[in-house]
Length: 402
Ligand SMILES: *Cc1c(COP(=O)(O)O)cnc(C)c1O
View 1 (cartoon, rainbow, N blue to C red):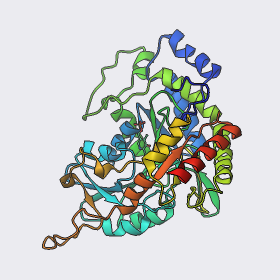
View 2 (view 1 turned 180 degrees about the horizontal axis):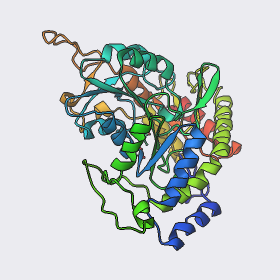
View 3 (view 1 turned 135 degrees about the vertical axis):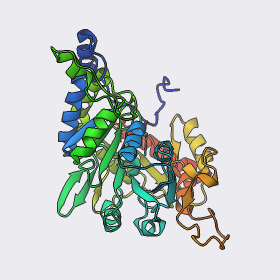
């Protein structure tokens, strides 16, 4: 499909001669996995977001797993998060043996509703995993206030949110500073910058950082660059159970170039989002995404809510027939077969065992409605205004006839 001249895909990475050239360095040096390039990428990334430390890993899923693991999430522990997210968010909790506690979202931002967090806390709550969905910053100020008062660490799933900003006091800060304990990013091609696959953790906590860099490499107490450069024999040790979550130096070299492009990519995406909001204004009943006053999205995705009468799948098919790819709203993890009801809990489930009404029913209504009545429109830097107008016209026709 993507080969058709008039086809508009949902997303497209920005890759060029710079990336092609950069990956020649590890290829010709012979050092292809985690080494100098990864270290340089980490340093540049930490500087860009404004964090003390950055630790590169093989994916954001790996980053989320490590983040929860170093915060001590273990069997029987609960982690408060949203169901309305990519499945990796909740999977990371389960890799630790933990139980996801799903709270509903706010319909305008598609992010965790801070008003529901307090009620979700139990004696087993070990962390709050906040997602900046589709690149839109979540209401961290409100969530951190609750978390701090209860002594619960916050992890940010910033998979989509590199380059997004949040107003803290009177200063705009990039997501990843981090405001919680650890923030986790993804470099999958569907995100704003890519290393093929890949992830990054940022933190200002030096002790957590020391553990993260060891755990991503089987908890080995000396890394192989140190051993490689040493002129005395070094025997390494493995004091605890670790993982292989390394990023390769080929990815690191690519990431450095992608990071250089990031400011332009974010600026372009913001312009495209403004264009859409203007072009789509005439479609009655359609709701376009809006930034809260304290948030600036990187517009990793542009998610519109269809008019009440429109059928999501029919609209998407009509647009596809015109050569325009769309995606449905973000999935709901609790609706998947891999998440049977006994594996998770949601906020409105009664804590009184005698009360059997409402268990796992209706509480995630906003999440389900967003999945069922929203669609994502194509948005990538190469998209032209003329193509955006084609998308807007196709959507107009699709909701008028369906
Ligand atoms: C993409 C995504 C992930 C997973 O990222 P990977 O790098 O593919 O592991 C996690 N959480 C959210 C919200 C995502 O969108």
